[in-house]
Image (cartoon, rainbow over all chains, first blue to last red; front, side, top):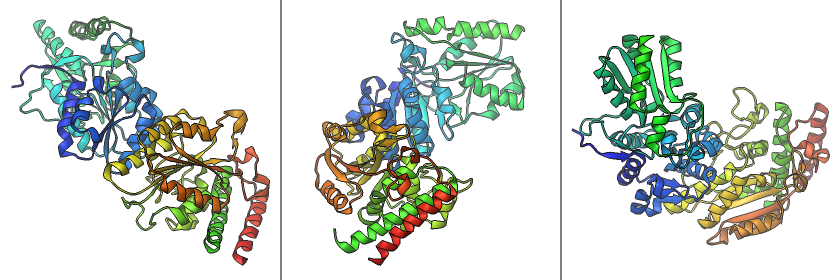
Length: 314
Length: 281
């Protein structure tokens, strides 16, 4: 069994990179003056010659990564999600995705759980931006083990990848011994027949707690972890819709353009099913401690359980 | 420069101009002005400088060329066709549905194109990445990027220049086609990138200012750039926009416009005359 540990996915990322460095000499890590916060500093320490600090210039960093990729490198271009996907959006689009280069764009500190830095740093649009780009794979891992596996999957996948990571430490719940990560395949964490909760990233652990709260009230909820938002696991979503009827999506992202919309698109095309989206309701965040913010924005177990209960009554 | 080589390059430059005008005319859109101003630079790069082989366009040890001012690809395409990367008949299908040659360079679809470009400023960063990879791998290839002077208004150019200077990328050579005009008029009035030489020097570059239509000066500058150690090079090539076609010269309106039937006839007549003169020498 997995030993319970609390770790931020950004930290797992830094560890995973430094572990994969030997096996994949093509890996080059780029950062934009945030190596301590994004945890690429762990790789830097081990492989200083394969680490490039690009300074506070994210647009250039994406272009440099693209150039490196044309020469056979596997660059991990890392910054806070806001700057990696927002500020450098056009560079990611035109220099990386359009030529379908083997660059891994990594956004740490995604979502409102960045906390005190406030709205300018709380990226709630990155999933929407990245999944709108042709050929881009979008991964949003939920805990330590999944992140480690996701970094390997990103390395082994030929083509652009966006990896969404968080600042806040989260408890590991995936089983370290037999956890298998497959790009594009969701994970059913708990079976259930009354309703399906589909969560991603940091919110999977909250959803897991919510399922336990619902159980106490006699509601048998299924929990699906969608770690790859693009390409999304249509089969698993449709199966859940067919078997449990109502679905709820949970994400630390704007309700517009993220996981919820991706799931809604699958359903509306093939099996129209009632859906509730839990996320940030088209507004900006603000400063505050991460846990308190998550609660205030309804991104906590109690609210997920409450919404689910009400939804089932309708 | 030796007379024979110079004549060969002058002929190549003239043919590049003809190919560019042909493509833009057939497409009924495109960018002739900057394609013509850079014709000598394209000719020198592809027929003297670059260690490239059209039969092996992806050879890892090759020199790289990034057309950061991607809109002037009619000139690049003409050079690539002349070099033998693809048949010259492709030039007549520029910008058409299903054609190999798109309105801005696409590395996935066009042999010989090392980087997809078109969004100004982005090519310089990619060239930095290529140069950095060469350094990391101990390879001796060189990376050239061609920029426009209007393009210098993009902040990314200076992010990339700071990067190139800081990382001492002496295998990188930026060539700036300074024709003094951009879409809205003279660069001096629109965005004011001058003094360009001082700016690049301040970012740690070896800087040379040359006449971008003189092969003697181009050769001297490129040869010197290869001897520079510990810093990237910038060659500031002063040119005339629309060079080679009388009515296009120094007219901002020819930045991105196709000639009419009549204008096309005049342009081709002039260029053919130039070519005949060169071949008769």
